[in-house]
Structures are given as C-alpha cells and as structure tokens.
Image (cartoon, rainbow, N blue to C red; front, top):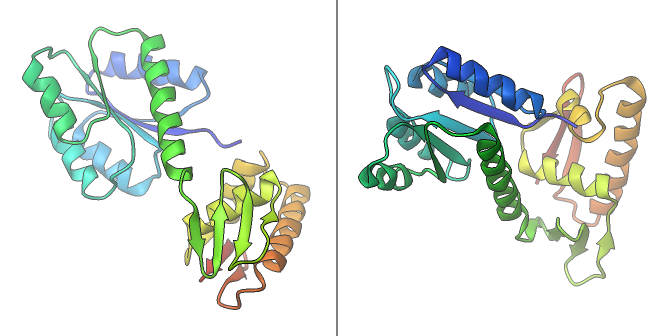
Length: 226
C-alpha cells in the first residue's frame, strides 16, 4: 500500500530531521520544509494527507500558512507545534483551522498517536456519507451500489476502493501507477492486468446509467466521467 504523506514545516533543522526520521520509521512519507513559504509551495504541488506545522517560522508563520491552506482545503488535518504555552496562542491555533496542538518539548510517541487519531477521524468523515453518482447511490463503508430503486449490488473490497478513488477524482485522470501502488502494492504487469479486470467489472455494474463512463486514457490511467 502507498505510504501516507505528511507535510512537516519546521525551521529548526535538527528537530525537523528527528521528526522526519521518526515518522519515516513508522512508514510515513514525510515532506520536510524549513519555512512557511516553501511549505505552501510543496502543499500546492504535492498531495499530503496531514500537516504538521511549527508556529514560529521565517517568511511565513504556521498560523498564516494554515489560514491560506484552509482557503483551499477545509478537511486536511493540521497539527501545530510550538514552544508557546499561552492560552491565547492555543485559541488562535484552533481558530485558524488547526485540529490539534503540541507544545514543545513533546515525545514522538505522542505526536504519532495524535497523527493516527486525526487520520482515522478524517477517513470516517470522508466515508460516512452515501455518495451519489448519476442515478446510483454508493455506500462505501458497506461496499454496495444501488441503482434507483433496484436491489443493492455488493462490491468486493477492491472494487469498492477502486470506485471510491475514481469518484474522488471524477472527471480527472486517475494515475494508473499511483492507484496500483495504493491498492495492489505494486504497479507491475500482473497487477496492471488485474486492475483492468476490475475496471471491466465496474463498467458492467455501472452500465445501467448511460451517463457514467470509465474511459482508458492510454499511458496515464482511467477517467470516470459522469
């Protein structure tokens, strides 16, 4: 499975490297930035799933960075790191869109627990609702599709996750290599052929609604059009 990507903004080189290496030993992919401006650039060019932001940074502080990111993404979890301990600083951190707050010094175990907690909460929020797709209702947690008032169609675990990612990237190309690594663990030839079979199965199950198409973008991946 693909590693969860974390954007870490920390201007103290030694501390930043310690956090990065500690998280990488827990199988996270960490993008380390030394200031807020660089972190904002990386955020726009990459697809992190969680942010760990130092509050006091050169060029752009963590609170300002969080405000800007919240205009683009309402849901990505944000953890602030700071040496500040005043109540008003904590309040400001939450008011600009932070989800959690760790005061320095802190233990890596505590940071990791808080990261897992926020990632779990975010996944529940993302998957709690039934997703509408044309005339279909897709219940991702239960892994079922329902067309209008017809009986529900049960999906396999992999079919459900593949459809979820197609819907998440609706009307955009879903990168073939990325999704193979995420769901199959490798983008080798045999897994690629396996994914082609799953795409064919999904096309058949979605065929009652002619407005839904899964097209093959040769050399790149698949696009769900609805």
